[in-house]
Length: 501
Ligand code: FAD
Image 1: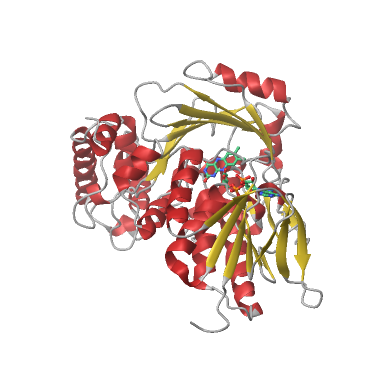
Image 2 (image 1 turned 60 degrees about the horizontal axis):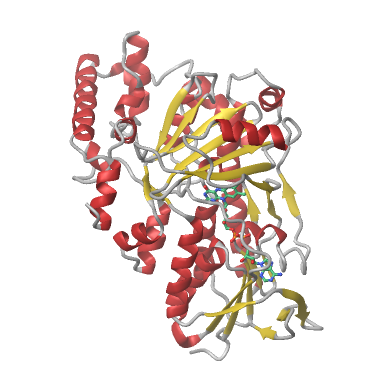
């Protein structure tokens, strides 16, 4: 081991971010470095965050978690994507699934062929019929993808819904078993090196002092170290993503157990419905300049499947990101680094990314500035890509039935997104700025789902044999419907996996 290797890492905060950071560090560093996590029962955690993206599977896999054990311990269900209701207009309904609309031909994505065929014939079935995830979601079926690459049954992916507090507890057990030291206390002071300005220790309310070489700020929205000590600054994106409030409440589980999240647009935001094994998570995300908290609670409670199991929990946030996530020997991960409203369930994915990048650019005690610079560049870029994708949902809607939606239609958006929308509206093409982020199919799902149909198609597709194309896609649609119908129901699949069936 190099004499400059870090010997003590302190993680401040034991929410989802804290434990999602502690677990891979414990696995990777073993006994070579003492990892300490400090969490405060008095402050608590944000306590929401139940829907994920497919990347969570790779995070779990890297830790070596057993799939069935994870589903059992976290009351997880499977997520094929998100059903959007009332977003484009009242009565509008579409699915954003983790998968493609059929395999590409000649390097051209399948939806381009649909656009072409739909121009030729007005009775063309919906492009959603070419999506395996949509067929499975509509029938409440689930099994993991299977088959050779290029087949429809291998063309989708999936994520999980889980109980965030159970997931944090599960990772806590994992991390503590691998040597992470857990301290329950409230931090009320920070010691800095007089010359370098590096953090040397945090001081606890009970008088103890915890020293470290690297401090990972997972303290939530407050950003105890990154903002409290270093005043990193915050880029506030509320003008483009006006929702700033949420209320969350669980209710009893109802049948059928849907393998997807539902997002229903409201007059001043949207509500979520997330099915778990033991309950359903619900929430209303809204902008409090357009609706009162009391009215927002009424909207939430009136849309529940079942009686609420608790009082709605009020949350406030400012969408945006910390200008820098890594300053000196402090790295912010989780809500301390920024927050984009949860419409596409991206926060846990951001935590996975940040932990991955921290390990990739792991410092020694020299803390070479180039490492922090690269980390900050990657984090900033990812935030901007996700920001654009989330704004897209609000910007291209045709809804104009409330002040909120009229604001969204007229609000300024980043040039990158404006270009994306214009390019698609005119030509059906999608630009992908972030290859690891939301795919072409994701953009197409949102744009076409919200009713944006391109004015012109791809001239090269017009040169192909039209009859052969129609036959090819009719067969594919048929294969998809049959494959979905042969799968077990979502609840049955879970019961088999956790051994209760
Ligand atoms: P927190 O949960 O706030 O944890 C902070 C920790 O720091 C706590 O342990 C606290 O005790 C500790 N702490 C703070 N100050 C001190 C101190 N002085 N001393 C000691 N300890 C301290 N994400 C998704 O991916 N999917 C979703 O569906 C989703 N839905 C969301 C819905 C809403 C309405 C909101 C607001 C967020 C949602 N998120 C979602 C985001 C997700 O909840 C967070 O990314 C995740 O919970 C991580 O939070 P955190 O650990 O950064 O912060």
